[in-house]
Length: 480
Image 1 (tube, rainbow, N blue to C red):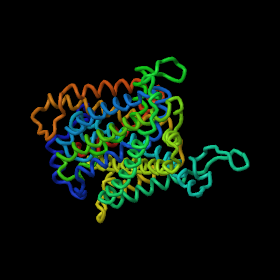
Image 2 (image 1 turned 180 degrees about the horizontal axis):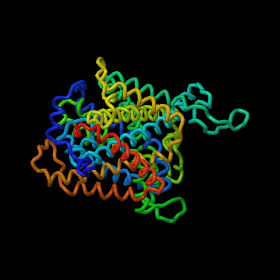
Image 3 (image 1 turned 90 degrees about the horizontal axis):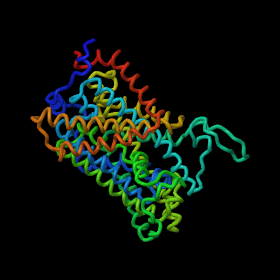
Image 4 (image 1 turned 30 degrees about the vertical axis):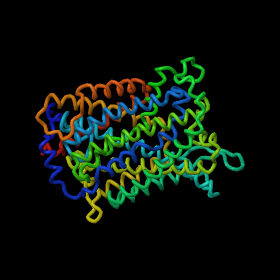
């Protein structure tokens, strides 16, 4: 085997021609829809769940600094993604960018890591969606059998105090199927539904901020960065960095905007606006939420997966608690919807290049969507989310995303010096410093992951490489 073959590249000219001549998918999304798509992917279960444990164990009131640092990484990386999107307005995001820059095998691996990251994150939050949804139903005295409220094999205590095993997490399965059906019918309808959901969850978050500002006890912000005494967790500056490693999950999904390239009107202009706009709005929202949350509730009382519920009780507003749960349900729904969308569009791009069986690129004649891959991905996500505990595997999601960010930022620097002739409708400013900031910060977080996460990542790397060498390489359109 010639080693050069596995690093063969698709030319930028060929990719632009594919974008101009693409058939089947309809360009129906503008900059506003792309910003909503990005917000739908970013603002979700992370902010409703992770803020409490991060503040308690690591940051204290300095959670706003952890959110700000996470936002800096995403904004720096987003500027690099925006430059690529303006050069190559093709669905596929990081996979396509790696194909043009690094070659076929690295692109294939990046594509696999992206699909796995989105799949694990979405399947996991589908499980979390179930808890919020069940809690919301209970406000209206609607109760589901507990054996259908947890993943398969989960132990729970029945009304007689006996320990029993759960059968199937029915709500987690149903939300995955529901979002699948929305995406099956096309991006125009799904973008409308996503917009409605985004407005609901953003309205509730802003209402939380507006009400919470009037209830802040400034004593809760003292000390702003707790000393690292070991009483509760790791604090100080190292605690702020540790907080980033947790809270970065709340930013996962910003690159999903790039997967909509072939369904975007004027993508060279609108894609950069969508990417940067979504990240900036999410970062500002997170900082304000973190400040209000730790101002209303002392960080030592936030060791819970439902920190917003604790804060709303402090506000003495039981009616608003219902709206907070509704906001959590809406937020997680939009994350599942957008992550499914990103997975299917990534698979569509990989299949067009011949690296996956052609069945995954079939387009529905009426709805103009990759319908078979939509059904397969949605069904698998529902089954996995309803039957498996994913806590350990979910760490892989952020690990892969951070790894991909490093690759894309490095590629931006490389191309700026290697191919200065390429037409760039948008340029990342301050090269190489902006990408280097993202690379250094993301690398710092990667080194904080446990050995078991790295072990899982290596297993995925080996399996994906074997598949490529035994099938993908010979079916590739470049091979032909």
